Image (tube, rainbow, N blue to C red; front, side, top):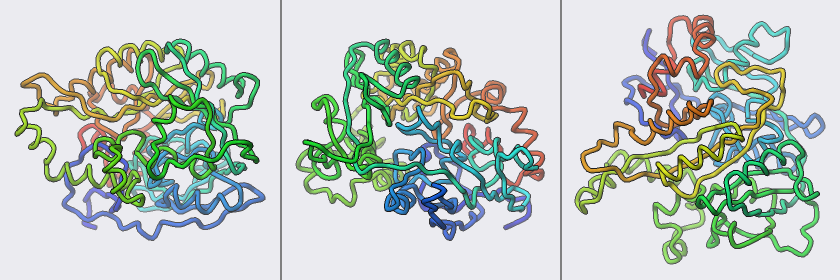
Amino acid sequence: MPAGAPIRLAKKTSNLFRQRVPSMTPGLDVSDFDGVLEVDPLARTAEVLGMTTYEHLVDAALPYDLMPLCVPQLKTITLGGAVTGLGIESSSFRWGIPHESVIEMDVLTGDGRVITVSGRPDDPHRDLFYGFPNSYGTLGYALRLKIQLEPVKPYVHLRHVPFSTARDMSDAIAQITETHEWDGKPVDFLDGTVFSATQQYLTLGRMVSDRGALTPSDYTSMDIYYRSIPRKREDLLTIHDYIWRWDTDWFWCSRAFGVQKPLVRRLWPDSRKRSDFYWKLIAWDRRTGFSSRSARLRRKPAREEVVQDIEVPVDRLPEFLDFFHREVGIEPVWVCPLRQRDPSARWPLYEFDPAVTYVNVGFWSTVPLPEGVDPEEGRINRLIEAKVTELDWRKSLYSSAYYGPEEFWAIYGGEEYRRLKSVYDPDSRLLDLYDKVVRRR
């Protein structure tokens, strides 16, 4: 690569929702860094190349009755991507988020070294180990990761518990996170779906060996998982189908393509009912501008893309949801609690208070704008950023961000980031984090 040219990865898939300025230089071909090197059923660990998707890792681990401690919801998220860009799932109230299960990594740094890093006290590069999460490839790329796994059972029994207020739901989240049980029964997985201000459900999952009187449901063809939540008080899925329950319809986002209409769904191949195919349709629409041109011809209002995951302390969740219903109006939204696993650890670029339970709120849609308002202004996204900051927390950076530099670095560990950048990328061959996620370079 030309000296001084910024280094990027050449990847065929992406789960990022921020558009970027096209690069004039070729990316690093990392296609060979895809594969599971080893699953150790005794140690309950896996060694995995950085570009391996969670779909491939799950396929390798389940025959040993094991799974990663946290499996992000979409099949083509990679191990390296989830660690450098964060991720979350319904086991996060027990195990935290993906980087917390990493034992060690090989990292390609901006100055061309490949360094094995870990959290061991005697590791000279442990600062990179802890600074890597939320760096989004601006400190280096994970080439190999060794992670922890947990034992699983063949089925997951689900209880969909309704709540009429966000406060009641938040209180239940706090209780379950502390006790890992509800109504006297263990809870292994916990997430929620908010359909409206008066209709919200927590889904409590418990791994079981026997399916009992229930027949496992199938949400990979005609039936739609999220629509079953208000209709069923209990359900049963195989562990494999539970892990990927959200991928078939990209949560509920497949409705944008008509896939939830019975006739369209019947004709749509099951092999194309998956998040990476929907993402290709989104990428095509962005390249061609088809949707925006069609809306103008039909004299429809311009729409702002609001695709975000934010996190707030559990006791502030009702306040955020009240604001969100009033000012944004996207429905449904997803909620998922998390708690830092190791209270002694410090992850400086996305720092948690280990004593606090947080709740991730995910919302992925578009919002109509008043006439004359440019979607590129990010009016709604800026409003959400301001509210989340007011509530003492932050949002994930996989999508559009509008922070000013001073506010951004105050939130995302600027002082430590600059120190790490000077050590592991002194010539700035990798992009700066603010340039990458806010300026979209």
